[in-house]
Image (cartoon, rainbow, N blue to C red):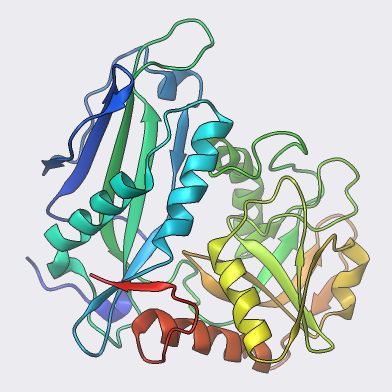
Amino acid sequence: MEQLDWKNLPFGYIKTDYNIRCYYRNGKWGELEVSSSEYIPMHIAATALHYGQESFEGMKAFMGKDGDVRLFRWADNAKRMQASAEGIMMAEVPDELFHQAIVKAVQMNRRFVPPYGTGASLYLRPLLIGSGPQVGVKPAEEYMFMVFVTPVGPYFKEGFSPVDILVTPDYDRAAPLGTGHLKVGGNYSASMRALDMAHQKGFASALFLDAKEKKYIDEAGPANFFGIKDNTYITPKSPSILPSITNRALQDIAELLGMKVEVRQVPLEELSSFEEAGACGTAAVISPIKKIVNDITGESIVYSKDGKPGPISQKLYDKLVAIQNGDEPDPFGWVEVI
């Protein structure tokens, strides 16, 4: 293949050699299939196209200094995809099938795993779609599960550098009793207009408030929000927030570092009391926040005056990345060498 500029990869799609597919038909899952095609033949009445029966996951594989490739917390991704499938009435992918597919996808595309020390990783995208036809609004009887991979750099072009975030009270990402807690495509399409507006105004992302009262912090664009104060890691609790696996890992690391952890409602006015703030997720890992601006009031809260990450965000990031890359012991059992 053409030599990739590993240290300057975007967070985008780069063609790799193979993807893995499996079909659910007649009430059971079939065998894994290997494909080199980037396209999916699909029935014109597939429920994924008409009624949003679609879920995906985001995961990463990392090359260690020792040359081993490591997966991070894959079982949590499998369980989250099962929860998403249950939530929108799709066939659930069993843990064993999920694991076999992601391992095979990495192994067959091993030459695309970015080298150690480049800051890049191999991104895995498990995808579950309703492939069977329905014209009435009801679940499909057939489903396709797929895993493709692509090498990626940081989600935000700034990398691990503070970014500006815009609070967007005029937009909702998800309803309180809707699908916000599931990783389904509709949540992301619902967030696109707010994100595009924020980008046009020069911000890296948008910060959503709760849809019911507009009083509390919800999602930070495609990521979870966290704030730091008084040696405490604080992250919002809401029925419409996607439970981030990275956020859960950071909570455990914070406790390991001697911090307290609070998962609770975070009022909008509390933002000004945080010493540090950030967005976290598989794609972004941690994106420290430089400042947050309220699009309605114009109020601006600055967390980083020197343009550098806060000391606690730095410690959390360093510890997480060291575990993922195999540079430090994994006391939690998160990493699997494949």
